[in-house]
Length: 182
View 1 (cartoon, rainbow, N blue to C red):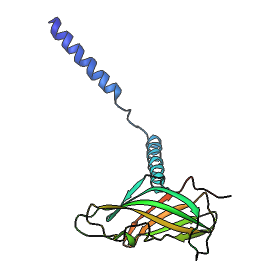
View 2: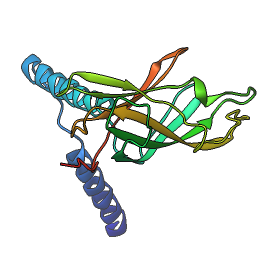
View 3: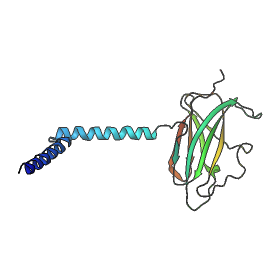
View 4: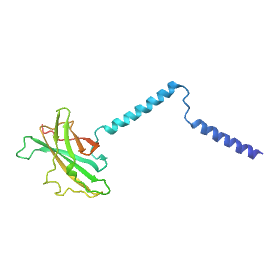
């Protein structure tokens, strides 16, 4: 009999503790609205983080490509026939994430922009520093150097990768630590 009482008491204590650990029920409409506002605010904050420019090493995957900006650096422009005194080089890794088709990452448009300067520059893939054959088989990847000729080095430079037939894939990275040569 004492054993049965001990078992029953233990079970009641366990059930009571379990009930106390559950979140309290929201009983009035004001509390329901406050809870929904907190959840939507948290979701909005997460969306802002996802849409803000990424840092070095962050990758973005679309339907055809996975793109990661590894690093970027700036130099004096060594191209004699150029009108711009500086160049920014972005080193990106591009992966073909399709299962069954060859892709050419030369079709990815890279743009460097600055809000302070209200300017944007188109990136090029120089043949002397990139592989001559840019064709990627499924699951194959390649490292590319994208060069931008620029008027000045800005602290707010952002590199954007755009793919013609993937509107949802427009990844952006903030460039940091570029030499300013001043």
